[in-house]
Length: 192
Image (cartoon, rainbow, N blue to C red; front, side, top):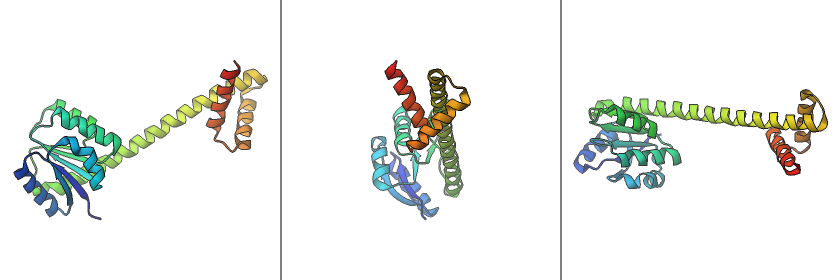
């Protein structure tokens, strides 16, 4: 499968060289835009798999639009620039840039840079999914613990019996245990 690339470059003559280099590396350039305002809509419209940005220096608008795009429609982003400023590097990476490359773009470097950006993007996405799952599990665990406490107090049973009662109720209602726990907590608040 050929990687579909969206190029953002406000210098039209430089963009032609970048497009040629990307095509030479085997990528399909699906669009070239000069303004960052269209970034998210163009990513969605073109179905781009990768965003390549070529800027002399990434400005605040570029960073903000990359941040919105990576939040709403995450894609790997490679930023080629001449600006080695550490602050801008940190801002770009925090916004979702997978590779921040200082020193311009040369045809022989494109494929390895894109490969690294894709690998980093996938690793970051996997870590985010794991973090989201861990947060969800912790949140569910807290609900279950609160519900157990309520059942223990109201029914005057030990922790094991309260947990067993919650599990039985969840199975009878064909619900996840966390949903049943949340219902118990809601009812306890309602009944006061």
